[in-house]
Amino acid sequence: MKRVTSGLVPLMLLLIGGCCYPEFEHPIIKPSEAPRYEELFGLHREVEPQNGVTTWLHIGGFDGDVPKGIHRFVWVSDSSPDRATSRLDVADLPGFIFKVDQTYIIQCPSMPNEPSPRLSIEQLDFDHVKTFWIFRLQKVGEDLRWDCLDPNAIKDLIEQGALKGEVEFEEREATEGEVAVSRVKRITVTASSDELQRFFRKVDLDSIFLSNGPRFARVEAE
Image (cartoon, rainbow, N blue to C red; front, side):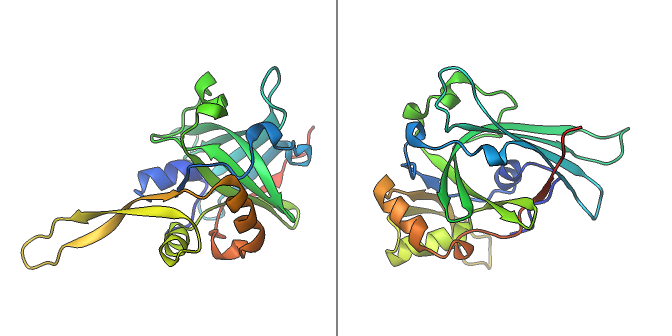
């Protein structure tokens, strides 16, 4: 898998690239029971060293009737450093956190299409979310790095019986002279919340998360 760059939000890159990202039927903890981590709140920025493309990540919370543990992750990425041709890519994701030592495990509603720039009421009604995506946010020095799960690692754990779930394959038709091959169509983790809590506390997180995500520096308020 290629490095998740700042040119697009990682979720969008995964979807556009055809990556089969694992979906979880159950959250690690209930959204209503999730703590709020205000130490993450604020504006963060990454500048891609190769092309100068900038991605902003704002982390905050919600007011009103939304549980206090629901965080808001707003991504804004300039697709080009050239102001004459630049285009902003935006994603607005609600999520809640299960913390393991100094690692923040983020759970967001899975979205079959590109994430919408605007949150809907349905996306904040976690009782009706069918599946979740899971990511890792961790401190690297003074920075924050957002990592995606490694789909191959989750697939292997399911096939080994170390994690409850299902791996669905689809066969790709072979052209003349080729052999038909199967590719992963869907990865679904069916483990319960209690089982997921034990799993994430026990597993080597570096073995299931990619460590090449965008790295953000906090932007000090002026």
